[in-house]
Image 1 (cartoon, rainbow, N blue to C red):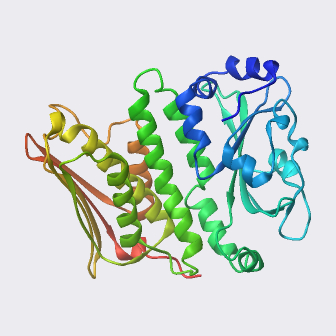
Image 2 (image 1 turned 90 degrees about the vertical axis):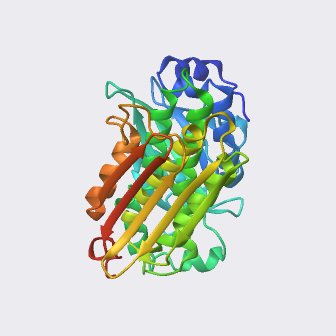
Image 3 (image 1 turned 120 degrees about the vertical axis):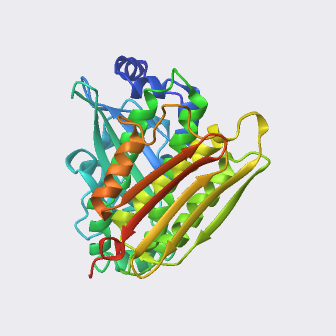
Length: 352
């Protein structure tokens, strides 16, 4: 999308590891340019200046390349929707995580999150500002912000909010860029898409009864197949409708995304056909989620999830949030079956 015009800003950006390397990659920048969320990044050292923004951010906030190399104060007026009229430019540097809804001068209504990105030594290197449009019936939604306060708090604290996850994913995947660009980007795209589907469901399901886990996992599975499946691979999908706590739905969706991505990448080599099964079945005791393939199975000595990988963190989150039990079975040339079970009382939405 945008080439950074201020050479000094470019030099500062490239001096920092991981994210700087990622932003220097045309493929990574192309991916960011087409995210459904608006993203802008500033380098913190030595002076905080905006060094990058994607197309979605430019369209929602109403900015062009003239803001590159400038401070956040150069953003056009976007006043906080709660009536305080605090500007987005101020909240970007003073707020944390979810910083609220805003009315932009160009007519767009957005929600915004902010986060500081540190390097491996704990040095603060970048600030990331993410914005998303408030979908559908904007005026009605804005007038209901107070009523949705509980929902927003759950999104913020229990889902660890979209911004924190996106920040972590960018940093983790950026480190993998020299190794295998294609697979790293595919995984990043899938993970962010899973969160995007959850975010959309939160606002389209105007309810405090949680997320329909079956419908959500159906969307995740279908999206992975559409993006990654080759000819000869089919999906066996069976889900029950069941309202589920947001802090259970989020890691469950990410686990399903991880397992399906693994299967599509490795279970069916050399054009081999096969089936990926995704079942989410509910009874009076709880929910059983099964992701299985009939491929080649895990390599000898391999395990899933692997310690130190993001998949292990996601599984740990699911166990912590829902008391989930995980069973992984693999047989050569018969495939991998992963079964996740969590009890109803641990996964149902909390009473408002």
